[in-house]
Length: 223
Ligand code: SAM
Image (cartoon, rainbow, N blue to C red; front, side, top):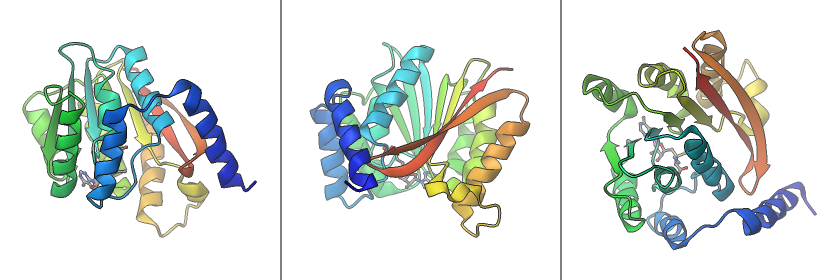
């Protein structure tokens, strides 16, 4: 069996026992694909991981940067208790339209506040309106902007908050300091900023699975 087939088979095995994708999640994937959105959403087991992190943290407020069709939004929104709130930022109008429909079908329209616009425009507005602090921030948009997203995340969190950054390994390309890929340089700078930030302690986990080889960084705001 090829490596990718093995990874997918292992995901299928564990997901079959531990990760339930109900109709709202499956319909969100179907309608996102039908609308022509790229399949860049988190895998089901990663969505469940985000859900578990939010619940373990006891998160009441979540900020997501990068909505796509709302698949991870649904996993995260479902982690919130009564009265919880999730703000998700998306630059693409078509994605936002599909996501709004998917989120509504999942019964989360009253929980999710989708802001359409480039995140570097909408994040300052969140600070201005006093939207934080958020208990969990999920950074999953354009990777070249990750360093800026981290700076905004620090302004919008408090000690005890968790910041997760997705797709930081990039098939191992992250180890190349001379990469001319701005996404690689974005995640490298993001990681260097975390390392130098006394208010954060963090780790990065490489992942393999149905979506190939990548990884995520999890940071805890400590001060
Ligand atoms: N979090 C989603 C999930 O797992 O279901 C996947 C998000 S996808 C990897 C990245 C999303 O970020 C895309 O929908 C893209 O349109 C959006 N995006 C890209 N640049 C952006 C920006 N500057 N501001 C806000 N969103 C942006």
